[in-house]
Structures are given as structure tokens and as C-alpha cells.
Length: 492
Image (cartoon, rainbow, N blue to C red; front, side):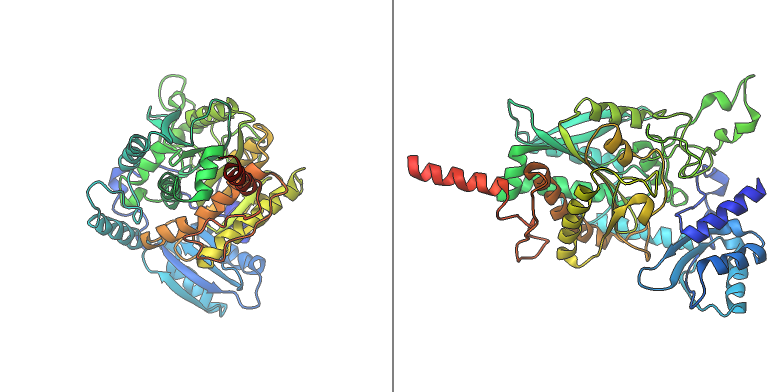
């Protein structure tokens, strides 16, 4: 087992996987010590390669598995490295010995987490009665109330639908937004909160909901799209895990669900080889889908891993519920977007194979270029686009690949939101609205593409992206509206 952990560490450091080994529950007696002394450093590699220094760390460090995360910084030969407290001094001494310069970005990861939570709590003091504050992160009970309130306030557009139930029995809710028609409508699906710690994803989904319902009747593009399309937006898929991530600073970086397999924990038939199921909760809900599930690269069979794929494909009720919901609307849902963080990436199939090219690759590239251009116009942020296995890592059993292969949704994307390397999962609340603003026109572009088809071309307004949807002036929808307007002038 020790050798396996070292091998995993090597792959983590070389490929830069996000690999915090935090899949084990935090016991009450450990709540005060988790993350204490963990440090985050920017390491300047100079002319050295990652592979070369990996060999050094592997042979010299007393416990290389305490290299928790490595993330390359685009445009540089630098890496952000997070190390456990037990090897922090040893790691820095080794950097000095090999004349690798560095800066310490986070002296104490636990303190960084606690300050992140204090800042968000302070912002709650600015809340106004009857208004939802989109500039801070919200616990699940407030998100659920917002969905209910929005459906009540905009009953002509929005309806709350239950798409699944969690392991702990909570409903997984989505808001269906669109003008009701007597004939079937095409639809766009957006989900978020698949991984508990990625708080910016639900916040972005909530902002988009608000933009749709408040712009209807005022913004011609949004009005067109709600007339022609339905939008299913599920802000939190992993409800149990999200609630768990709010329960204590020591659990802020929890990723998985909170399910467990009772059969391995107690009773005369207990399997002692997998007894860690008793203390290692949860399944990575983005490794549990029935598409190349359980392959040796891209997920884990270890219940204590953050990438644990579960006991079998679609074993998790959240995945089962969402997959059934989408399959019942096969042909109706024509775009699938899943929001995650972090990295600023717009990714399309495949995740499970780095060499296999989807038959719709040209279409994927075209829409991805349109969407990332729309993002860039708002605040200047660059989102890289490409196949998941090319620009991030190999991931098997993922929802995006399932949506593309099994639900036959051509436009299936996973989107890693802000940031690239500096804050990671602890994105400051003052970046919530800017992040959501830049994604808003990209989502609109997806809707227009679904409606107009592959002949769609992106021509943005010469206006601030935060205010503009980047409306295509010669799109099919625009031409239809123009023709209708001319006919009304002629015949009325």
C-alpha cells in the first residue's frame, strides 16, 4: 500500500492532478487540527522539468504523499504546490538545497479557510430583507428557499422540479425556466454543485437563473430564448456533500457525496478488507456515470479516495435520478453544461480517452470558441477550451461523456470556473458576481447555438459584456423576429 501511495504521488506531481486526499471523514477529535500548518507555495522551476524534480522529491522527502496538490501556472515555468504540515519545512529545505526559489502564498491553510468563511459571513450583514445577495455564498437552505421564491414570483416562467433524491433523502431540485407551450420545446440543461467544495458553481447557476427571469420582457435575446427554449438549472446536485462542506471549516474542502455501504461496516458478513468504508464516506458523483465506469485510469476503487467511483455504475441515487430525468427528455435536451471549479476551462468529450476524437469534434470546437470569446469580452478572462483528457486529465465515468454518448446530447460540456491557480476552491466572494457575469453571455450563446444550429456565427455587440448577451444580429431568431415585425406593419 505504501508503494502504491508513492506511485500515486508521483503521478500527481507530474501531471498536476487536483489530488487532496480528503475522502475520509473528519472525526470530531480532529476538527481543530485538520489543515493546520499546511502550506501553499509558488515554486519557480527555472530550467528544470517537473519530471526531473519529481525524482528528487520522491527520493528525498520522508513522506512524498504529503505533496497534496500541484497546479501549473499558465505562461510560466512555475507551479503552485500545497504540502502537508509534516513535510513543509523539509520541502522548503529541499528547494533551498537545489536552488529552486519560491514564495509562500499560504502560511497556514486552515487559517486561510477560516478567513474565507469569516469574509463570507461578514457579507451576510449586507443582506436586504426580501432580496437574495448574489455577492456571497449561500448555505443550501437559503438556495432551496431562493428556488421556491423565484418560482412563486415568476410563476409564468419558472417551476421547481425534483430531479432526484440524495443518499440522505433530500430532494435534488432544478428550476425549469421558459414560456409554456402546447408543443415540445428544445431545452438546455445546466447543473452545478456536483463536487461539494466548488461553491462558485452553485453561485454562478443562481446568478444565471436571476438574469433569465428578470431580463424576460426587457432583454430581447433572453425573451426570445425563453419563448423558444426551456432551461433546466440544478444549482446543487450533491446536496448532502454541499451541506457537509458547510458544517465546519475542517470540512470546507469536502468533494464527494456522503453515502456509505452499510454491508461493509458491521455484522457477521463484514468485509475487513474494505472496512475503511466505515470511516471513508462518499462517492465522486462525477465518476459514477455509466460510461467507461471504473477504468483503472481516471477514477479510483478506494473508498477513501476523492475520486472513488462507487460500487457500480449509477450506484448513487443522485446520478440515477438525474440520468433518468435526462433520458426521459431524450431529444428535447440539446445542450448539457456541468459547472465545476477551478481552472478556467471549457471542456468537451472525451474525458475517458486522450486519443479518441468525437465525431462532433468540429461542432464542439466551434461552440467552445464562441463561448470562450463571449467570456473573454466581459472581464478579459481567458478560458482554455479542449477535450478534457487533453487539457485537464483522464476522467472516467463522467457526466459530460455520459450525456454525449448515452443521452446523445451533442453539445455536452464541463466548465471549470475561476480561478486558475491563486485561490483555488477558496475563491473570494468578491469574485462571485464577476465570474457569473462572464459566464452569462456564454450560456446565452449556447442557447442561441441550440436554436440556430451549426450555421450560427458569433458576432458580439460592441458593448460591455456584463450588460450584453453578445446577441447575434443575423441569427435565425433575429431574422424571424424581424420578419414578424415587418409582417405586422404590413397587415395591421
